[in-house]
Image 1 (cartoon, helix red, strand yellow):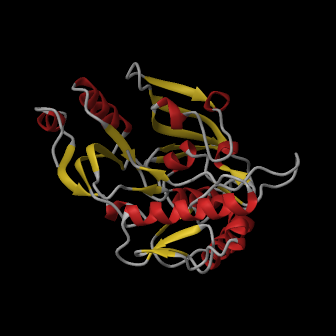
Image 2 (tube, one colour):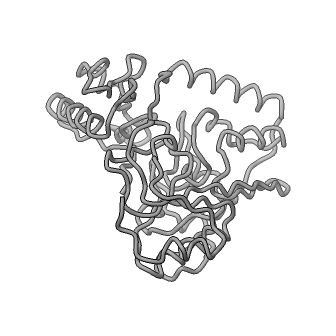
Length: 307
């Protein structure tokens, strides 16, 4: 795979960054699907991430970031640009706040907060991926979302290539979304504001929620819920589960190639072994068509297509 400007890789290496060429991306995603990236830069600190993006921007190359790869679908042809593999994962607990770099594992962060006697994050037990990805997509479960816990973030501004601190109010959190999905800013670190709680109770809640999540989700590679839940019918009511509509249209067991709808959960598409991105997209389109015909509503995809 080509397409990178001349001198880019040498420039990245001159910045003492870890660079690899023509790297398969499937192993870096929970879907285990997709082709290679022209280059992957593994960044292990916010400072490395800043140096990498500035070097890439200086020559006008395409770039994107991958954290835990848990809500991501990579095209079969891969990505003709530079992927930043976010491995900056330092975590610091300061009184009731947690300061975490974007690549910190969300599951470990949930456990660490509980052991420190800090509550509010237990709902995220079992959600895969990094805290950075969780904040950008405002990940959540059981009626809660990570944005509720965010006090501020540090980003690298896409337009100025300067670091900036943003408050929670500036992040525009909404259901499974934030402004960071559209600004192109690179999330570097997060500060979470939590409340003291009983450690034993928190650890028990985490175990229970992880067990409940494991019962609902399949064992095969997947990206979790493929579609967003629908807005509530009336204000104050919970969202309408997309899985309920999908089950009503006979989604479970539907298959295109090695992409199939899980028998456990109608809103989860799994990789049976050799699924391609095109299989997943064709299956998703069929699910969208069935729901639109029966219920007159349009499903919104939660999984991000790289590129």
